[in-house]
Image (cartoon, rainbow, N blue to C red):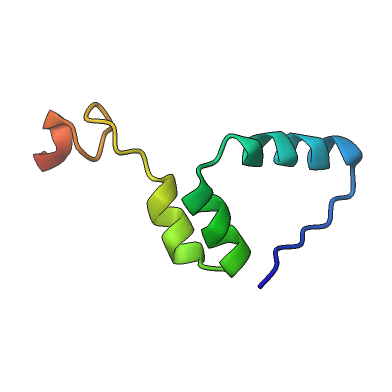
Length: 59
């Protein structure tokens, strides 16, 4: 599969390309494959201080 995105503004395209360059290989592959569920999982913050994983989670 292949990923294709159109932009109305060249600056939006440049911004998106720079953003993708910082992604992991796994995230890029999920995008190319159209596996948006996996992309969402890979994009979630796994930091211990994140609101999902912190001490406030149970409240």
